[in-house]
Length: 87
Image (cartoon, rainbow, N blue to C red):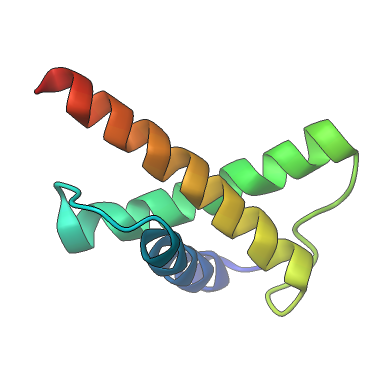
């Protein structure tokens, strides 16, 4: 996948993760896409390490989307813990 595909996938995965894990997050529309992009990378890496599969096959593959969304959910949860700990 190209860089534009990663950005689009990350934006959408971040929005879906935010929808699945609602709540008040500081950072708003800047942090959510960044979490989504990083979550896509994290999800792909975890799929390779844990399951030994190539989870980032293509933009329209369900495994790519699941990996990106799960990675985004993990990062969103960690982000909330870190921000909450600072308060």
